[in-house]
Length: 123
Image (cartoon, rainbow, N blue to C red; front, side, top):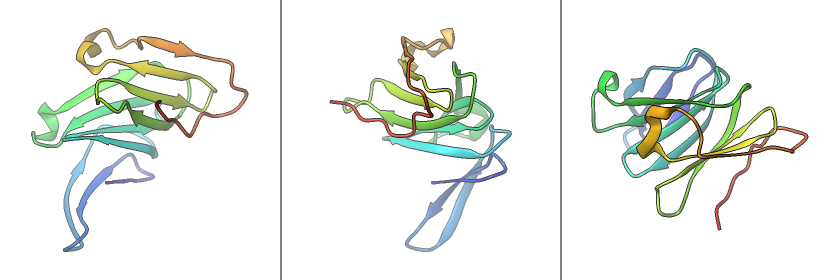
């Protein structure tokens, strides 16, 4: 998967160097990507997080999460694949449970960093 400056996310077959498809949804640069099985989480300068189920048509496969006031700089799924952590340019970390994404609010928000949160890890 490749995030592009125009908001597109491209899925590639790297062995055949063939573009499989382009995922729509973001309006600005996509700078964060994280796979969880068949679900690709993408984060953008448009402040949104999209969850793409790549088994389905793009129109039917996208869930939107929003909780950062600035660009999404980092994404990382928990080892069990149940939670997604996102880092924002404003210095916060949000933890999401996509099973309850209808609320579109993070389970937890951690603040206090003085710069963008780009690297995330679970233990």
